[in-house]
Length: 271
Image (cartoon, rainbow, N blue to C red; front, side, top):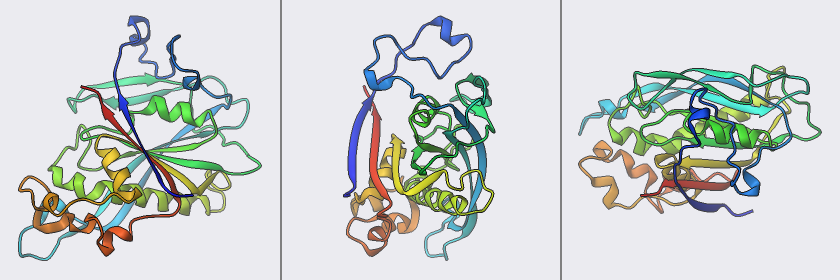
């Protein structure tokens, strides 16, 4: 199947003061489209930490110097179909708001650390990638919803691009597609570990990437839409030509295109 790129426009609305009191992420408006309804599967959620070793430290790059490297940490929120009888939903603690300081609690359907389902066949993988800045909870409502319909959903905290860890934009330009592919490979490895909760649960050969704003940028890069030469030279962008790796038509960009990624959805905010 050829990679498909879908572009959607996201518009925000408030669902009422009653929902705001508990910050519920599992509410469906009565006038929502039919497919907005939750599926029938109970779901669990777990938080994982992974490290992508030997990545370019964009924040420390200097023109004419060797490229500095660092081990790049990423925190993941993973939603998945759970075994029957897991009980009611749970909460997400310490979720940071846009100021990078204020934290809130979210309430949803997923049960923390619930036992995974034992499906006859593994579920497809969906990777969710937030905007600049953002965090892995930015589309947690979507993560839960998709998991109830038979997907394993992994949302990434992108280092140097979160509300409390926002840094130079060049890091996001270079690292966003690399983060997405690293997470794909990390989940692949976990799914092959005996005794891991993802073992037998997820099929990474059938993966989609859902990105909001700069997450959508990353999804498009992975799906085959490289950047232009001009974009690699912006003074406010990635330093010392480090964005060249994503240049359309280059060998480095062609190497990013992964046949396991079957669909990419790029979401932008309406004005």
